[in-house]
Length: 180
Image 1 (cartoon, rainbow, N blue to C red):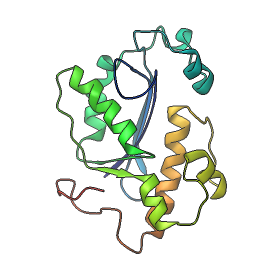
Image 2 (image 1 turned 180 degrees about the vertical axis):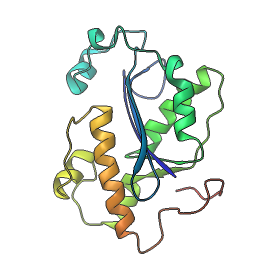
Image 3 (image 1 turned 135 degrees about the horizontal axis):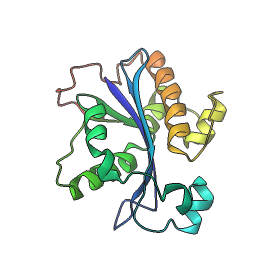
Image 4 (image 1 turned 90 degrees about the horizontal axis):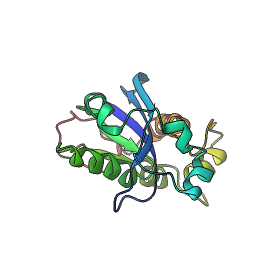
């Protein structure tokens, strides 16, 4: 199993920054079999730059659940799955930070679609999600929103699976110690 994840936040991973949106698509290697999406109340103001980038405003999240409210669902949907994201270090480390604050240890195998794309479909000028999707004719509906970016990453991941003649994408049991 794989979980393709995207998050929107109030800033970088370091410090007191918080999540404002999360989207997760659970994928069995052939298709999406489950999903989770929510805006999240970060408990602080969203900086103007982030509001402009994502379109997520303080008003949009004022009645949304906090991360603590959805933490069990995040743990459940990602259990026994490889955590997949475009620039996986950002999304994984952010979720891990939020879960650590709640007292959970959070470890998952990870796979980065940026690094995997560079290996399996070399030669692109940029591997940013927007530019790579444009170059590969992958539609992105809702750029810089968790659900739109995660859905585009699902399509990219499926393309990578089809191009993976080198066996770079782990197809082992989720308890294997191999990491990408």
